[in-house]
Image (tube, rainbow, N blue to C red; front, side, top):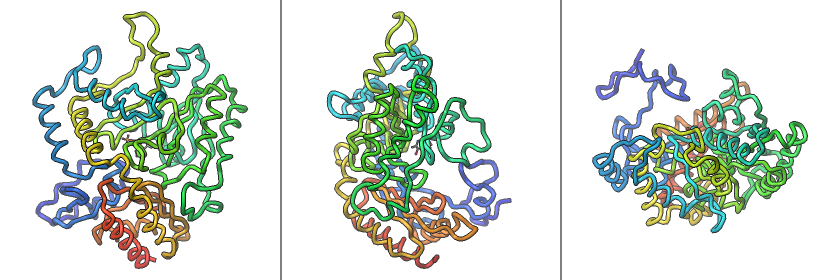
Length: 446
Ligand code: PMP
């Protein structure tokens, strides 16, 4: 059922695409054929400005020669080695380099690193480490995992269970012993907050006290939140919310996990959201920007107290029965090391902070465009929320998405929220171009 006459278009039938309306897509396929710097090119060679860093991951921009060369060198030196019971140098080297920039202040850095293959695997790993930690410190009744409404933590059974998206949950069984904090998204009180975080809603962290009272402290292992919820529409934490969540979790012996799969590696203007907000969790999940998105990889950063608690028992015993064939994959570590070199030499872990004021001004100028009900920005992220069409939610933003693409700008939409997160190498002029295209398109599709 492929309706494509173009000679360079591949056959479309066999590839079952993820999170995509496959049948609709294959009627009118959108394919990206190559990429360099801030731009993709489509099958006709037309340039498309990357307003989303791929899927929030290509932080150093596309086609970085240094990364490609490092991966090739590594593959020709050691392409693969067993990840269990055996080691290889580059995994240790990468973990040491990551430890130096790990989330948290000096002296409290979460500098013990467990490698995974993706964000979803990082989430499942962190949840399992949390439960294992509680058991290791004599709190074996603590197995309950708390997430938050409107949270996205990938698609593993652990991730969808703590996640708060009905579409990801309704068809599948979820883990018993999970529950959710209320979400913090409140346009009525916080729309168009211009400088800083939403002013209202810190008290929503007290919802953890409600769950403690409901389930009993001694049943809860961990609470996981995205410091800034990305995939569900760029939802910023109300001022003071994360601090309060930290205090309550500490008071009740509950581990706090920040899911930094999106916010990690410079997106907010600090290396991690942990640093940006000055709130230190016990575990941090990452992926995406870890390798500039070019080789699949994730990493969980653990505080030493968590790690060390699990390093007990008989000398010759495996401390944590968990891991992946591709944990610390040599090619991914090579990509990660070369990515870190670029981040550090080009100042990309803090560059979003330098551009944040310009970014915020450009994006908030869209507040007057038709049907815009909120604009939210932080670092180099923006969420522009549109009023849904009566009876046809999602269609307004989808129209904006397709028209932007026709005009050479790639954006992301989730429901009626437009999300922007360009590579961190973006120039001020390209930010202005994105804002101008969006303004025109929102007008034209209104
Ligand atoms: N957690 C968060 C916060 C994410 O944004 C994502 C992906 N968008 C994931 C987990 C899952 O990552 P992956 O798709 O690599 O499994």
